[in-house]
Length: 245
Image (cartoon, rainbow, N blue to C red; front, side):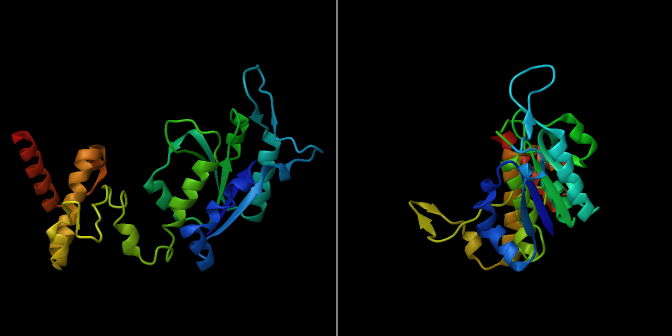
């Protein structure tokens, strides 16, 4: 997979893209990450990429010409590239979207900046994505989050499908709690079932703990989670118990 990032600040990505899982994914050949400088798609001597907004107002706006030239340059190399603008006005990025994007061969992530981008860019992109209802200085941090979330889903990157399938949101639920040594820490013990060696009971315990956590912290997730009969029985008992308390 090829992921390209179009930004005014290419140095922002120098360290993150070469650390931990992203570094391993590139070494494995699962993903190629390229950082493109928006200023390289200008033609004036000063490489200007922004200007004052028509109609007045604070701040500066990214110009349309270098953005479109960059998009066209990439599309000339690959018509199948998915062009995405990171923007607070976009659809909320989710695990489902990460899975969808992980199935593509080529992404171009555009990092907005300043007061925003010339709105005519929407005629040239495929979609917008947002990280949430808050404002960041630019699109670099959201783009990095997309790269990380997508790359870790690529085959072989995490060393096996199971490592991904049990994570939060992969099943529609929050992940179950994890423990490691020591067994006792200041009076807080590891649940005995995890030391039992009974893998069937451990799997069921983990599923129930995922359900319990989700009910407590993110009950909205249950609306779109596939539940079996055992799950529904556990949730019914959980609800009855809460009513008694």
